[in-house]
Image (cartoon, rainbow, N blue to C red; front, side):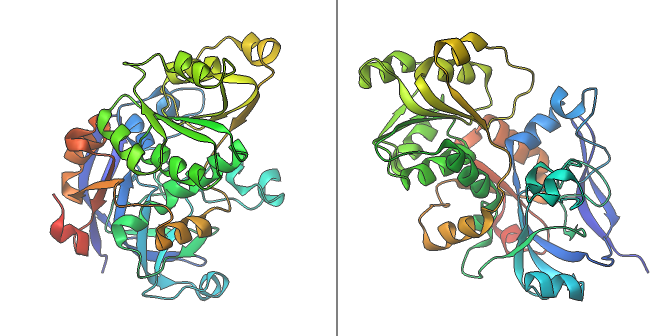
Length: 367
């Protein structure tokens, strides 16, 4: 007899529906898990609004119908013995899986660069085996990378493991040196995680940029030396003045805004390092002569959180990265539409917004 569960199903831009769908059944190499909580990412919101990056030609990133959700923490229900032995997990364990499901066959996977897998199967964007966590249950498909989560990490903090892993990777790409003047643009969940990780690298000065005063206040509490609003301050001139006219050593772009990119390229010093993490709704145009002939910059991209999950788990467990100020709102799964609004518009000071499926501890206290 087939069992059913509640899930949010994406059928197209702004066409998301709460439905009763068949509960997934694990096959060989797979893990069935009960979703304890799932996050709403900025990329989820852009996908919901129909960003061309996700839906447009030539190769749409989204294949509907699909259950969204790539930030999650789950409890193991059933696990293939081979997978259980490989990752040391058993029924009842709290776990996360990395958001990409590598093919383990392409050039990148075979070289250990699995996060750039040619197939780019990511939870919550392509239907079928890649369905995500906005549901009561989900599968970790064959090939998933699974990590155990200590029971002493609260479920709503554990959802931050995936964003924090991405933040750690971005900061590692920045190669921050002791004494560097570092600027991070965008104090959403990822930016606030990057801020805390960057502080651990010993910068001389750490500056946070955002357009929302509430988030700037949070940034100061989490370790920023300065928190500036580009609408109120000429941040490029401010940083140049503070650095004797040179500019910052490192600029990390986590806002996903074209103006943030242009601002950063103007702000960073000659021979400086620029890390691009943000995801954009549309292509961004900049003057590439500044990058080469003008400044000879080192430009890094940053994608996902490879090899960073164990460290993310440890940072949250020990409190070296504080999750509580970032995870601000929890909604019942059935109230997903309201949750998306809170996430998109930062209503009521929202930073990281979660969804709690029925039957979970967080569902009982959710909005």
